[in-house]
Image (cartoon, rainbow, N blue to C red; front, top):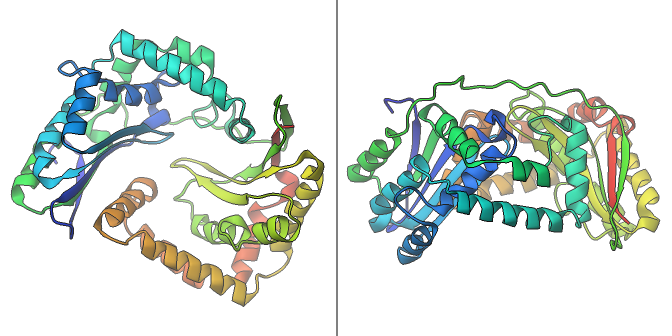
Length: 398
């Protein structure tokens, strides 16, 4: 568009239905004050200068649409699914909410009460506590990726913080839109008109943040009334654009990212130590980490840690058998096909490629790595990145 925003479109094969998503490259990464991105997004649903929260809910219900706003570490996403015949009406409506949010003090106070209640509940859940403390140690407790939500940070947010965040970050420089529906020119012109309403930002598009190098640590957070222990063990890695990302993605799947993985077979099926254990390659736009997660009985914690380290060392010292590697390749290729099963699935997959990897060509890179990376290359990646003696270990619960 003339203001620098981008639009990707896909004609739908489902007449009468459409999907539209606005993706802003902001999130925590461009915050001037901690939690401002999250609350600025949450309160968009509470109305604009023209609409109250009740009117917003009534309008969405009346048209039978689905409307959501979500902010994460790197992006804010505004999604709309509706009947094609109501698209232009609803598109104008949601653009009013995004461009002119009211951020009323009463709505902010209600949001704070909800967040505080939610946080107090989450802090009683071992899985939530272990993950938040793990990422805090990985990235640094006061950094953009590592800071945690606290009651004090919730209380410190003011309406002016939300207005500033919205004006600085809901801008055309940060905006990419994804549309799947009728290819009629009238809808294209409507989308173009809405996108060009967003102003250009007056700040630098990319903000840099220092993320300190994590050191090996071991931490336990006791939680009263908890009968289980939640475990997170892992290490700092890299962003999705890193040349080793797709290879480590394949290796992570072998280890613990599908039901037939090594961790599942050994620690769940053979030993019966846990109902669920899995590994994750948690990559963000600017950094990332690898970790293994499990819910365990305290009596089996040390034995499980030993087995996890044994599986990591097995990948570092020995080649993955060809039959196992082919099974994982088939699983991942089938999963990619599932991500393109229908027009709406496909536009969401395209959004992931563009937003998180920077280009739709990432699909070909991913496919190539899955089909061609051999066992020796995977062993080298494991040797380089999956040393259990360098990992951070966090447990929470009993």
